[in-house]
Image (cartoon, rainbow over all chains, first blue to last red; front, side, top):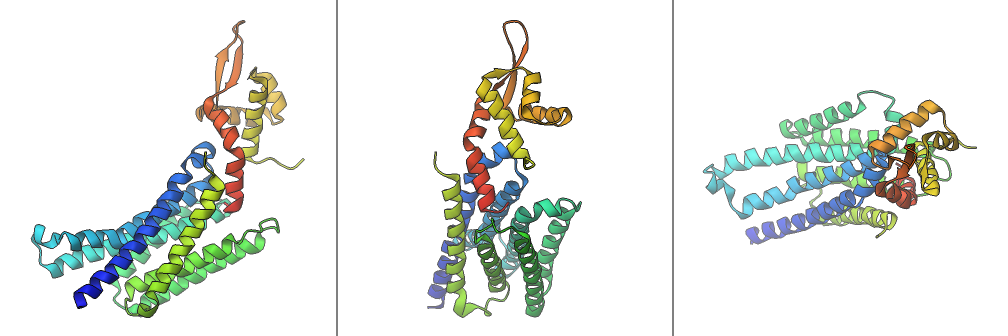
Length: 228
Length: 89
């Protein structure tokens, strides 16, 4: 019974990751020609954000699936406990770094004109993402995770709101709302991974809402890039 | 006239080349309506990106022509701009 529940939960998680990876890769490759022709910096960061999302979600679920499905611990002759610890921590580190960088690249894609005047901002973002990943691995305290994510969310929210306030009325799109929702669901995703029991009742809802946001962004990309 | 951004200047230069089919560098500079130093920068960028190329005419004069990639840029220009505006990039 317990085994079936675990497989069911893993299947949902893999399906969810699959949707996010496919959407992200379609956005990345769908905008390839536009970037190659224009070499626009905003487009570059936008594409990188979705490439990083794809990598992050690959590590979130698919690695877990491969390890469990092929029972890799018996192949490389490690005790399951040590095996889970090593690979679990490693995939978590990679997921946290790439997903944080994805969010930072998305933020940079709308802020690059202002941030480019400040040298080294991209290194600062990489450094922050690495720090987030390391804290996630070494800190065992859920309050630290929550505090860090809430702090990060407020930073992102303030940057997005300030950017939105400075936009002219011609910028009539509701894209900022979509981005804000994406940031909120990213935070909820992180909490779901780091503190598994915290959101258990809402897990499916978080997955559905996050998938919808990615599908919405993909729809906007397809609509704008058009079909030749 | 509002200040043109980089993509607009690139489009304008390529449009001049396309409309003339082949054009000498000096008239291209004049019609581009930018300073000669900026023109040099844009000209080398467009050449590096393989949007334009130099050929030699019957009287061995240097002429600028549009490449297939340059034509593709002009075809896709509106899509690029709409995309940048839609995603506020």
